[in-house]
Image (cartoon, rainbow, N blue to C red; front, side):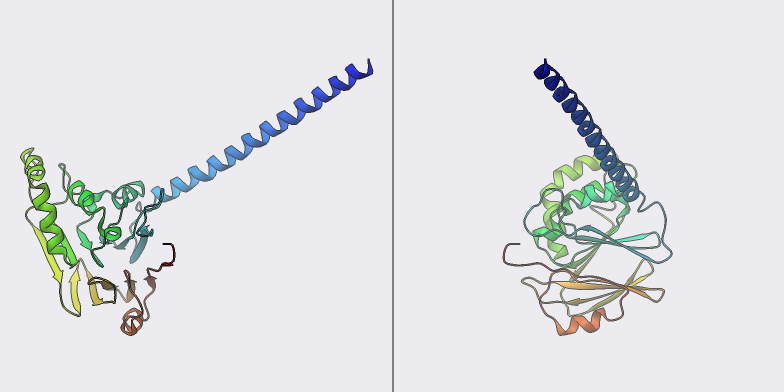
Length: 252
């Protein structure tokens, strides 16, 4: 009899313990889901307001090796209602969409350099931002080797682009009305959408440039890949925001 009572007590303890664990897991899952939902809500509200000055969004900050859940280098500089996308590594287009910004809103695309981790999503962004009745109808391409990047893309996809244009979409923004500023000199200074943009070359394995955005007494600097450069310090001096690429070379 005593053994039956003991077994009965053990079963009750196990049931109580099991219910407690189940409840604990349920609470943990709910807490996690609440945090996840909150995070998603916050990220989708990024572009619901227009800043009075600059806003900088790190769209991707990965490295040359593909990582699940991590985009490759891309930085969005926003001034009021104007957008300047610096580089377009893998997942740039989809990440911007998750943040609430459609590719068609990007009419200024700048490149620090032409390495695949910095331009791997260009084709997708280039075509997706143009196609459709509300697609962009003008585009500024800026940086080193952008003429070659544009020519290669258009030549490769020409049949596809002509087909899509035949559906009734204007060619402006992809085959026409595309302004290309192909960097070959040591310094550039120009104004675009109310922002003064300065660019200087920085040391890397291919032609590479850093960008400085100035407007209303505020500044943003985006470095791109580089090794030590004495000129870069003075170039970035007094900037309110500095986006500076860096990596460990031993194992990416």
